[in-house]
Length: 382
Image (cartoon, rainbow, N blue to C red; front, side):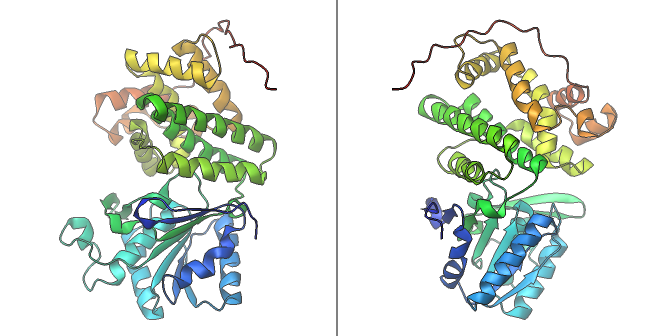
């Protein structure tokens, strides 16, 4: 086993294992929770490979298991009902999700309904409050979501997403093993962007030590992304993504960036990934901010890009230059989505959000004229 594996214990007793080969700890972690596990998994190649590795490990360690697959993005109420039935038939007392946030949402719903004799949807309508939830665990391949610490569960029913939040819906343990997250370039850069916008909004809204922490994590994120642009399989950089993601969600109290909710709706309505939708709206959102926020963004640019002087426009140009090598769309048309402003407006009645959508539905303008940027003098390290 790799000695770089790190054990963390965030609030509410969630046990988080981060590092290469941390998957090897799975059997012992399961034994501490119950006697038989139901594996919840999707259908993507990375998750299929993860499922095979988990099955082989559990067979080797003689730990009983059953599985339920084909969980699609934005998991549905029907999938949770199917999982509850499967868990009861197999007499499973642990629910383990493999992959991303969608499988974890489904696993939470199953764990919530497994010990309840009524319709699990009663918890979403408010008819019932959770009193007992079977142990929920996860092996996450997405370093950016913070799902390992989340108390929420979102399901789709009749075409609409509904969310509940309860402390009992936190994972008992989670494994963040970069060996299991070897995604191709584009989905990896999507994960990088999701981390970026989370930390960027933290830098915009937090002050003092928390602000400095956001800037430091953003520097680390840029370094990891630069490495992965050169070598997509670099294990050290992928481990760094998991560490940055965990620290950004556990050590900092960052509210959800307002444009992320709009991006979630855009992604759900038009079948984009959340990262692609978020990046397509990001520059339009930044440009829509108030004067005082733009002043703070200029400060972020100065600290983030190590400049002695920096304006809002220069920061915007520098951010474009950082984002363009990722291959992510910087506008809605670049995402491949051809849609009218009228159709986009169906997502929201908010006037400001509609302005962002309309702005984002145009190709990205040419960068502002370059201004001479003065680099800070940084003494050489001895």
